[in-house]
Length: 77
Length: 329
Image 1 (spheres, one colour):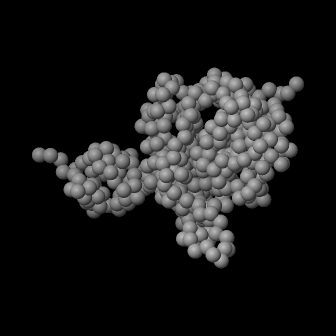
Image 2 (image 1 turned 60 degrees about the horizontal axis):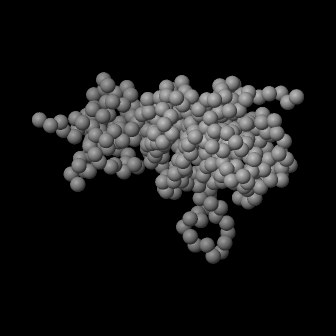
Image 3 (image 1 turned 90 degrees about the vertical axis):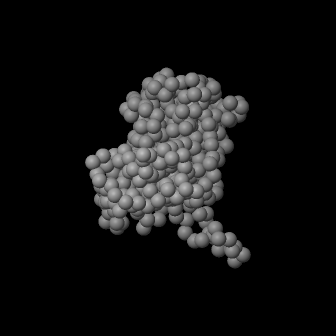
């Protein structure tokens, strides 16, 4: 079975520094696990490469769920 | 193949402002600023004018080059924070130096030093000048909103200059690019008090606003692209570049570029901890620091990359040929 968007986004987020062992759910607040604005942009850029999409540079997801929804929204266009 | 850098100089204001001091009037902390930017303190003008800083940096550059102001054929100054909207900052510095050569400014924000160096190269290449002063003078503190913790903590004031002389191997590469995006980093012009002006661009207050996410993404993507292009077009592998001097906007941007390119971090300059982002003065300030510490050896290759408002990005590859400073006999 193909990986869900959630799993693929979480894998990218976990690539960011210090997040290997952190459990991420849809409700996880990105800032609370140490993902600041620049780390979020890094994850956005990695998602663009992974999914072949273009995300608004000023997109500012606050939670893992919001991040996944942005990606899903673009994939379903 | 037209110039050699024969001298460097720089000047900083006396007053240092630490992150802790900023946290006394802004909702921020040393940990927050230093972990996100690598900046621990910055120099800020109090009684110094930018004209004074520009003159001091220029005199030091002339002294290290062993030439007098009257030997200059051209002064090009990069500044977007000058003491005067007119005349050019370069004119104010020329007056103070006692130079009478053509003097004008280049406005390309944080990329301005590489733009100005390219302009000077044009004059040298066309035989219109033999010796030029390329100065970056920035008083960023005047365009900051000191109530905005997302921008004012990043910047500082400085002036730095190089003297270039016609003849030599540099530049091995130079490319300037603009990817227009005014809103990404913007400082509105003077509002004035024209009773006729109804334009929306004339709001009072000339403070900087910045869309940080867009700028971070632009910087990391385009600086990486520039250095790859430079290497491809010149045939110089990146591991043969002795020093990378990137605009010092933020340590995290430099780190991200280093990671993408896989270059040796020890060859990448980081000098923003004690001065912050001093806009176009970052690159010549770093060069002067390295030259005076003996870290630049004749024959070494130095890649310079500026990036910032515009959005502009500019890269050049120079062969360092300046001899260590000799005492004039």
